[in-house]
Image 1 (tube, rainbow, N blue to C red):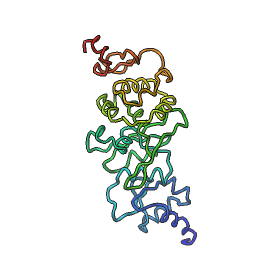
Image 2: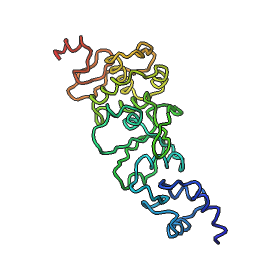
Image 3: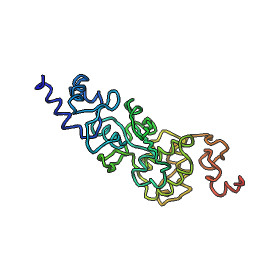
Image 4: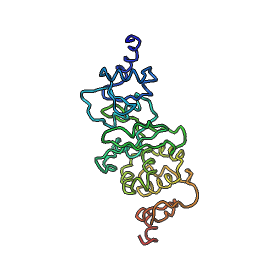
Length: 265
């Protein structure tokens, strides 16, 4: 029996780094049944985290850090999970603009997320998003370094569109405004491709509101008329004012200067 189990145990010992997670479906794909996993726990090769999830024990890793969880998802369990939105911006030098507290709220995007993410102990809260903001097959990702190993994240250009999608209920206009302030090095060709494949009229209209407001050098390379901005006004903010160019309601301070004067702002 031990000899039959050795290749499966070898996979666990060789492929699951110390401190990282592995779930039951991944183990079963490599021949490790629930019964075997239980034996590996008894032998100290794995330790249970929550039902259906195990961790390779580590003397140097105590609490469950969110980057380790995501690295395990991406590299070991191979879920189509990408760090996006606010979290991707934080990981790529925008922390000064978007951080609001010590609480870790980790935005993950993908077609499928394991249900156990919501049950993990630790300081992080995982906010799970679908990948429907962009047309199917749209990929615009970068690798960012982390102590757990490189993480796959949305590029800053994609992440800022994901951030816009959170307006007005889950993000603030002020946060988005400060992010755009720091977006001077965005790549216009990348932005143009993402805007073409973005499925949200709201996001595309708001993008041009902020792009016009900050007028970075890349703005002149983007043409609003090349992007499908839909038709008809979009009410977005209670008590907001309709933007004269992009027909989406925004707080009065985000109107162009002439429109502010007309509204008495």
